[in-house]
Image 1 (tube, helix red, strand yellow):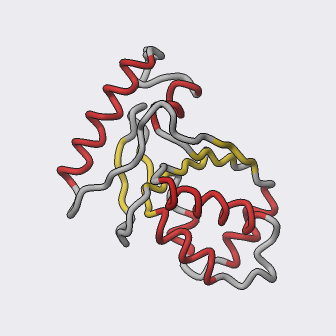
Image 2 (tube, rainbow, N blue to C red):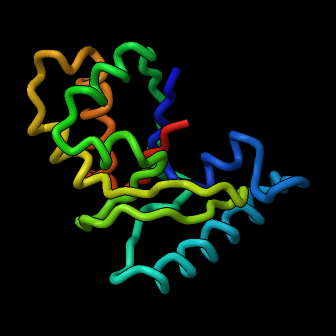
Length: 152
């Protein structure tokens, strides 16, 4: 079942096993430093810098979507790549979809929360299933509060 987490990456990694590949570090200060270094590296590689809220007081929420609802939503998507490929959407108005190694050395597709929201809002709600309302609300909050949205 796809699970969606809205919040800063420091909290995501702290609550889901830390950073690193084999010997994961769960110290919040180490994780915050790793996120900062990753963002700096990422911004050097991209056409323009992306920014998001990494403050410890940033909002955080989680929602689960049923497998059949997720499949119905993906099937109804007008631009399925922005929905089905990413497992991380970063806030910011960019139209690029790219792959990058995350803080666990896993290759992730990264998309734009703004593009995700546009795609969801353009969808025909009929046939999209119950997941549309859940994911659209999370994408809206991602854009509004400048927070990453993670699908795990």
